[in-house]
Length: 200
Figure: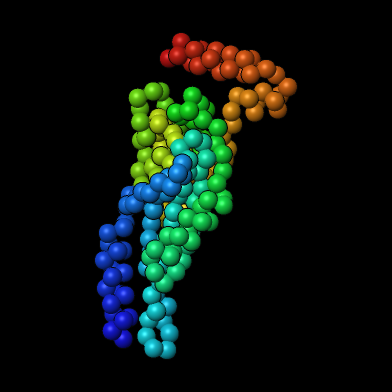
């Protein structure tokens, strides 16, 4: 019983400290790892309550690749290790504009969580909070505006952010789909932007 009480006390401290923004960042070679959330889970068994920990990790190379993973174990380090391994296996590639921002605005939804991401001019920085910031920073975005609406559950927010990022397309991809040259697609985007500015 003493051991159970000791684990519960340790877990209670961790839970209060780990809420909110990402609390830990590690770098292995080119991969940046960020701990987004730790949750303490209790299972009632014959001898009392058995505690375990669930970790949510985000990893990325800050060059257009990012992934997330979830791990559960009796100890915090083991849960983080499992989540990191899963995140590295599920990394996706997102096209970036000038290696600093997104090509276009996007929206994602997962469950009750909704997020919106918008490309931004140089010097804007990463305007996003909590789990969204962790994903965008590990992705390597330097200028972006993000907004979360609805659920603040970190799991829903991370998944919704990934849905928005998966919908990103580069001019090269659009040009290949339409059978046009990249210059034509970019030219149209510039013309439409200037027309919008003149209209305002």
